[in-house]
Image (tube, rainbow, N blue to C red; front, side, top):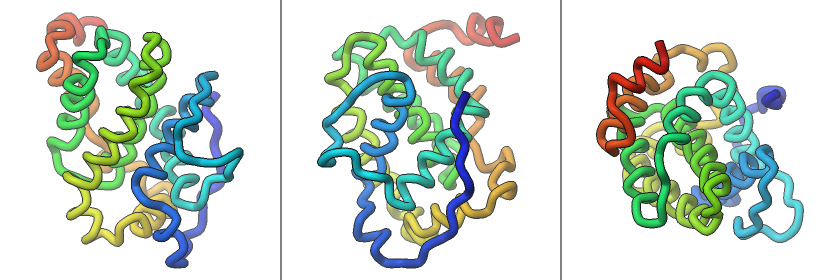
Length: 203
């Protein structure tokens, strides 16, 4: 059962922005998903058992929501990725690119983190835990390179906290990417399986 927590109040303190650079949010979330799946990963730059701050906790909460709604779609894709050290970056990049084909919003950014967490779990399941460090860097680079301009016009991570605080308003399907399209296009682009075969499995 995915854990749920109360919605966090929005905190306007500038300390949030000082403490939460993108990499810390990525590393915290990936560690959280790995621990949820029974895996231990220490290379997140923290010393000891540090409690998540508001932005990290909000990402965990929305990641839980993502898992409840969409994990089956991504699980089906991830299980068929035939992950290797050589193709890991291409596989990851293809799925992430499809996630933002329809534009950027906070729901799609949560989807990026959700997929990254599931991808990291798959790395452990495939006996490739050394790839998790790479995943953290890939996500961090993608956010800073491709999403930063949009985020800067939407109040950065403070805007993310505002999105998380909206409760039921954020549940609109328009906030999330089209997962059927992501899975279909990513699978076809990677040559993992034919589109017809995948859709037949889902019918």
